[in-house]
Image 1 (cartoon, rainbow, N blue to C red):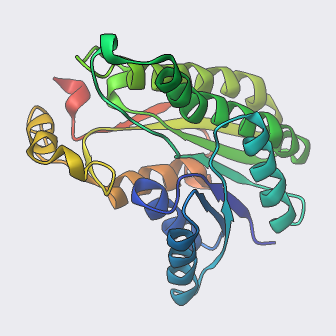
Image 2 (tube, one colour):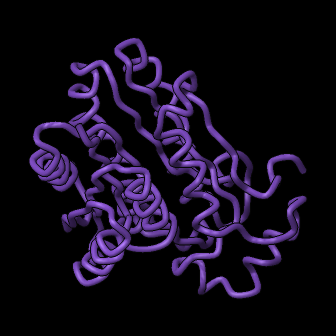
Length: 244
């Protein structure tokens, strides 16, 4: 039976690369994001390459949208979602004093609340079947302080703790929960950083930004049986930035 994977934020960047790679590995991928046109493009690309995919639009701004997406994915998967990749996220940078309450809530809603309630909706079903994998996408700035990145980094630090807590909660039932921690990565979302991305990446041993496909390889490793004995891990894929 073909397994089903739900990948949030998969209309571009790391999420899209992960969706395409999971489809290439034989999973039926539920592509999700806010932009229906880009979602249809990802689905077309996957199908053209011989894979299987469907698109579900979701903005993931509250519990209801997360649970609605989970329900749609379960319907597409015939009552099962075997892999959940929480890749959707927003990353505004800026000084603490300039942060509004609305902006604060928006970042935590997308980066923490949505993954939380997707796991709440899907992990129990995985546990009932005795099998499943959840991969959260965090960031290197969840591990150290960086000026202007406190809000974004704190949401991902919360996701790191949740990764470990969920591993403890669902691991005994056969559900593996892990995370990938990317460093500077060249995607559509980071294009606005310009040379700043290269300067940030220059601090690591690799000396360059990563690519979405490089991050996706790590996601797929943790999502598949190659990582069958890996629980509660946070895998840095950051060009060695964590080492310096």
